[in-house]
Length: 156
Image (cartoon, rainbow, N blue to C red; front, side):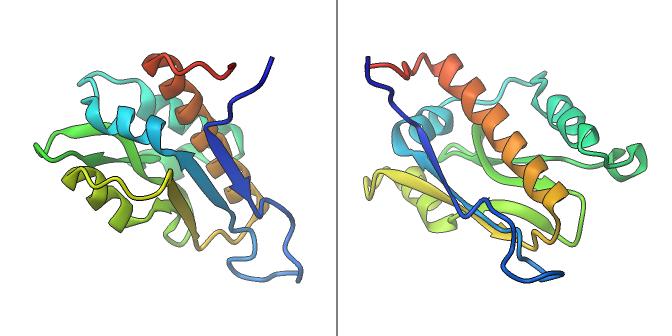
């Protein structure tokens, strides 16, 4: 049995220097098939994803006060301006700390351009291991949920 992978992670490791701001950044490449499927699907009005995301972040030691009005997921709007199931930005508490999709690749999805076979998510101000771990957990929770919802089989 062969495994099919629908995301690839690069650079999830300890920084080369101590106390290096942004030193915990990493990149995630998401399979274009999953990205398109999520982009074409409208986020249900009562989606539990925000609450699940807050719980993930809380489990990494962030306080309730930090999470009170915090949104861990920023969902992309599709060409009809509906909120899609594709996450544009994964966020955790910090100084604008997140993992953000390349805006050009999101725009390509809106215009139905077919360039490349992945969507890249790039780090912003990931200063601590706690932030990096929480971001990776947010991503994997969302990606695994979407693969299941979209019926993407990981075995070939």
